[in-house]
Image (cartoon, rainbow over the protein chains, first blue to last red):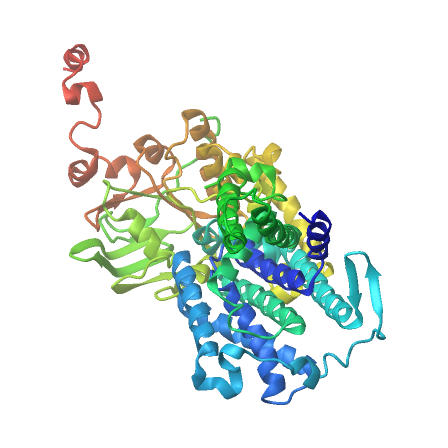
Amino acid sequence: MDWGSILNNTLAGLLTPTILAFALATLGLAMHFGFAGLLNFGIAGFMAVGAYGYAISVLTFGLPWWAGMIMGVAASVVFALIMGIPTLRLRGDYLAIVTIAAAEILRLLFLTTAFEPVTGSADGLFGYNNSGGFADANPFPPGDYGWGPWTYNEQTLWMLVFGLMVLAVATLLLWALMRSPWGRVVKGIREDEDAVRALGKNVFAYKMQALIIGGIFGALGGIVLATSTNVSPGVYVTSLTFFLWTALLLGGAATIFGPVLGSIIFWVLQAFLTNILPALAESGILPVSGIQAATLRYVLVGIGLMLIVIYRPQGIFGDKREMTFVK
Amino acid sequence: MSSNSESQKSTGLHIGVAAPGVKKVDPILVIDSVKKSFGGLTAVDVEHLEIPRGAITALIGPNGAGKTTLFNLLTGFDNPDTGAWSFEGKQLAGISSFKVAKMGQVRTFQLTKALSLLTVLENMKLGAKNQTGEKLLNSLFPFLWRKQDNELEVKAMELLRRFKLDAKKDDFAASLSGGQRKLLEMARALMTDPVLVMLDEPMAGVNPALTQSLLEHVLNLKKEGMTVLFVEHDMHMVRHIADWVVVMAEGKVVAEGAPDTVMKEQAVIDAYLGAHQDTDLGVVTGRIKVISEEGK
């Protein structure tokens, strides 16, 4: 086994545009579920709306990259409104059903050949970073930057810096919101919305605001992901939603840094398993073929999710006291 | 009670003979032909009812009489089939629950709703109305709401001291006992500066020692000029603190009047108290013979 390359690949996985994108989406889930108690199983749909919103605005409507990104965010607000207006007055489970269905409908709409000139169907969309000017906006001169496993060319560095900035602003925003009286009301709604209603707060409006803000974080995740890879319908699948949930619960749903660190731990672990499992299979330690070993990591993710929820429901960074009082 | 002089009953609340639907001198809440049915069952069917201002009114009746449903209707948590009601002269029919609460008509719940994973102090601060920082855009700028928040904290701590919960201010509400949660819910309701406080079974599940202090708190509300309407099954409490009693049975108001007179009415005894209200339970069931002989 080549321990050197396994270690190198794992460490490189610590800081990639993909991880930053997933951390942003997980932050959105933290707003939804961790703080407002909204069961959103369609976060992949929010990411897709952001990514497609950006790419289509640039490719079809010829907008510059920053305007395209704003369009992607605006589209996610519309998406949140469409889902929220009929369901937020109902019990929480309805939102869960509607979001999981809406995300799938959206993915299938992007996948169908009916809109191929706009959505690119199964091939997805590409080239928007160049034609929209995102690549040209790169302030870094050509060259290699960084050290060891973290060596990047100027393009990847630009994606990383952009992603980091967006993530930092989103994290700061979430922190500022949750320490305020607004955050107190939202957390109260998570605990018991009738009690908050009886105190004269417009619960529906707060839930809608929380849904929109979390949705914007999800869309920003999709946009950051779109800056580094193509926009492809195969990415925004339901299993992505559940990976994000795992990262959220791992870090701690009702925390600010938990979602970010949970995402990093989760995807670094994924990178590690992707590298080590086939290697173990090849050297005969695991009695399975290389391809089987690669899919084994999804089994391990499922087991991991169950173990977290059972034994550490507050996540790694959650308040210890919360565990004593799980409803 | 220690505060005999303070807990004087309000009298002269009604005009004319005390009967279901009697007019009040100064009603705060006026209910007209409110009707609510669940399928074939008529849960509430109130012709006319007025709740007197500045007094403590008890709403009693057997289980399933529609007391809690009436509470839900009056506070906007449920919609009636027909009917209208007004609070301080303002029509409330069709108004959503949070707006009703904003007007100063605040309620508590039969099954206590403490916000478990918020601290006791956060629970309290949440209760206050008109907070600048509760608006989304304002919340990002602490200088807009910090001062108000500190003032609320002072007010909340004062109330918590009164309810003997100040030592628990940083604990999660989930760690409180059932009785303490009742106290917290009442204290939180007071943070809204209500005009009318509606308590749904404030004594249910509270131990006798705490009952005493809860009673004092309810009496204090009246002393501070608030109107109280409460649902309760504990007849001693009703007799002790209520100025006016409304009796419901099968959705209708069957009697109302001052507590000492209304509880002697045949309709009330039939509907609720039963024929054995002054006899020991052992006698009623016939399982304790000695007491039964003494009773005769």
